[in-house]
Amino acid sequence: MAGDKELINSIDRALDVLLLLQQEGREMGVTQISAALGIYKSTAHRTLATLESKGFVQQNADNGKYWLGLRLYSLGMLIRERLPLRNIAYPYAKELSEMFDEVVHISVLDKNSPTYPKHIIIDKIQGRQQVLSLTPPVGSSAACHSAAVGKCLLAFGSRQYLARYIGNPLPAFTDKTICDWDALLAELDSIRRRGYAVDDEELELGLTCVAGPILDRHAGIIAALSLSGPTTRVRARFGEIVAEVMRTARAISASLG
Image (cartoon, rainbow, N blue to C red; front, side):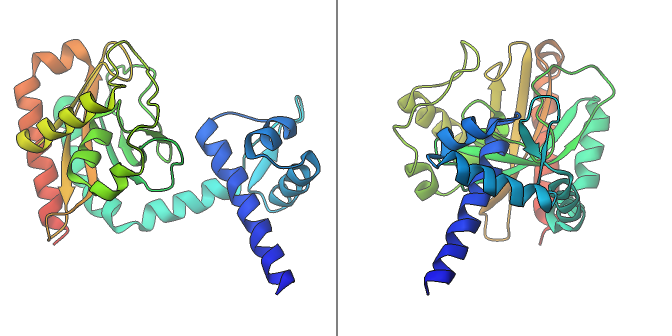
């Protein structure tokens, strides 16, 4: 039994390292990783060496720091290609992106975030027009409270999930980010009433997003769809964008059966 427990602990540490690198979104050294996870440097080093041997992390030869490896990329791409939701939603999302020539994201809740609610981007369709810097890539995990797609997931999602985080600090990204829980909960109520969510420069100044829920046959939310673009362009066609985002989300929901 002791051997089994040690194996489980080792796997747990390795997964913690991978999740830490994902959450930080940057290369990290052994000292930084050991401090963040509260483990010995020798343990962190052995864990990283094991992960590196399997291609799950890679070390930068110039600075000695570690980042996620190509094996994770290949696994992620395999999952992405075979994910039923992504396959069904893609043509609808592509049509929406082409209609406005803006970026469209599809996201699901990150159910393992330890600090505050986050969402994971499972698909992204890039428009031809120039976008701003903070439109996140596929596979990234981002804050829910500062994104239309994230607020949509919270508004129509599980109250139990939300309750896990209420009271935890919410980071500010701009002076428009909703960081007060009472204000955020009031915003989620408004989203449920009107049926869609808006990020009004809450993640990046000059960037506005509109999101709608993708529902299963029981009207439970499984994902959310958003269209993002420069504020001036989105505001100029706001009513049309809201209508088309909602229409697309309903079409995807209906296709899921």
